[in-house]
Length: 392
Ligand SMILES: Cc1cc2nc3c(=O)[nH]c(=O)nc-3n(C[C@H](O)[C@H](O)[C@H](O)COP(=O)(O)O)c2cc1C
Picture: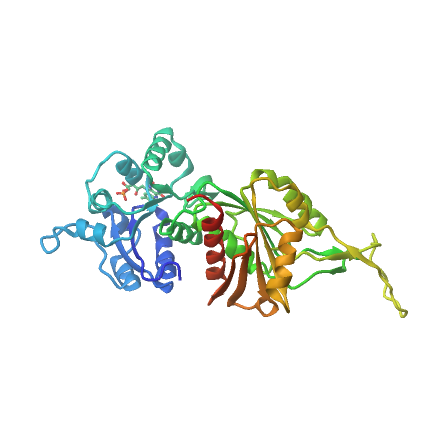
C-alpha cells in the first residue's frame, strides 16, 4: 500500500549479505513496487543476473554497453528512491568521496532522489574510523544510513556490521518516500491489553491485539518521528528495532508512561487498559473448590487522566471504543481527561483488519475515518494530528 507504484532502484555491491536482497525484492514487488537493480562487478560473485531479472521482471545492469550508453542517467531518472544494499565499505567510501568508476557509483551521482545506504561488513572493517567518517559524510549530505545490527556475522565473528533486517530496510524505504511531518518528535505510544492478576496464574484482561498501536508506531516512524512504546499483552510481534518497555498491569503501564511523559512531544494512548483489578490478590495459586468464589473489583488508575493532569506542551491523543453515541461519549471523555484529540472506534473494529473511527479534537472538529486497513487508518490519524497541532 505504501510502496504501490513506487520505483525503487537497488544498488547491490560485493558483500556476503547480497543474497538477502532476493528476499527484499520479493517483499517490495509483493507490495506493488517496481524494482530495478544495478550491480557492481564484484556483486556478480554473490548474486546472479538471472535470479534478479526473474524477481524484478527487469534487466539488471552492471556495465555500460553501446546499446545503452546512458543507462546510468535512465536509471537515475526512473528511480523514486535509490537504495544501496548491501553496501560494502569499498562502495561506501567511493560514494562519500565522489568516485564514480562503475555503473552503480555513476548512477548514484546522477541521481537526485532520496538515497539510502544499508551497510554490511565485518565488525573491524565497519568500525574502522575512516569508514565511520565516510558514513558521517554521506549522512551530512542527506543520505539515510540504515543502522546495522549486532550479531553473528558470516565470517564467524560476533559484533556490529550485520545487514539490517529486511523488514527494517523496507520501513526505511517507506520513510524515504513519506513527508516527514513528525521529524524530530518523540512519541509515546501505548498498546495491547493490561492484565490484573488474582493469583500467580489467573488474571482478567481483554482481547486487544496491539495491531493498531503497532500501526501507529510505524506511521510515526515513516513520518520521521521516534516512537517509544509501552507494550502490554499483544498478539503482534514488536520489531526489535523499536524502543519498547514491556509491562503487565495497569499500575506498571502508568509508571512507565509517567516516566516517559516529560520527554515526549505527543502521546497516543492506544492500549486497552483493564479498568478493574482484584481488591484482594493471592501470592499462591488458589485451589479449586466446589463453593462459589466471590471477588471484589476496584478501579485501576486512569492513565490518560493522570497524563492529562500533568500535560505541558505535549499533544495528548486518547482512543475509545463505544457501542453507542460514539461522538457524544468520546467528546465527554476528551473534556474530562484534558485531551487534545480522541479517536473513537465502534466495537466492531476490535480484532478486524479494516478500520473505522471518528477523530474528534478539543476545538470541535469531528472527522470520520474509514480505511481498508488499520495501517492506513493509523497513518491517516497521525498525519492529521501533525497537521492540526504542529506548525508545519
Ligand atoms: C566472500 C567475500 C565476502 C565479502 N563480504 C564483504 C562484506 O560483507 N562487506 C564488505 O564491505 N566487503 C566484503 N567483501 C569484500 C568486497 O567484495 C571487496 O571489497 C570488493 O572490492 C567490493 O567491491 P564493490 O564495493 O565494488 O562491490 C567480501 C569479499 C569476499 C570474497
